[in-house]
Amino acid sequence: MALDERAFFNEKPETRQGRYTCPKCRRTNDYSIRWVRRAKKERLPPNATDEDRAKFAKLRDYLLRVDDEVVCKTCGKKFEIPSQHSLMFVDQIAGLPNDEDLEKEIAAASGEPEPPRETKPALPARFTRKSTGWK
View 1 (cartoon, helix red, strand yellow):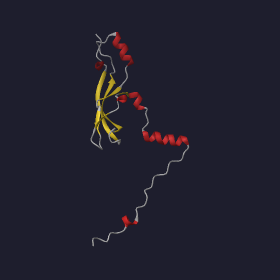
View 2: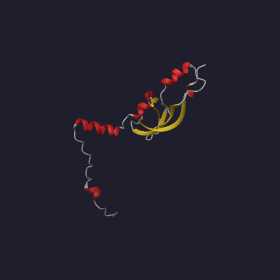
View 3: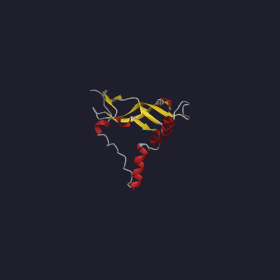
View 4: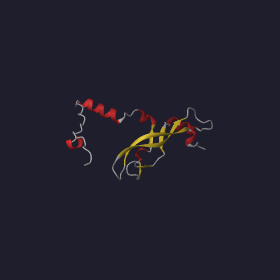
């Protein structure tokens, strides 16, 4: 009889940040998402068959998402997390740059100067004058 998949992996829960957009209010926020990390065991279980040995040789560490829904921090509505990232291989995640570094690298490679920071316009005088109090 073939071994169960859990016999090949050690499971460990973890929390990762994810950025999602609420479909109701269209606001983007960061959410804490629960995942289960399944790491390949160092050795094959002792009662493994030849079929199990072939499977074990091909296995990789991966993350399996536990949370399917999150509650919007802005409007309070529950929405479903897009399902294309419910399983992610650990070796694919480790090489990914974060968004800020990627944007800086793209700007540097394109030769474009960094866009100037947005400056807030000055407040009108009626908001900056000292109040004279109630009359």
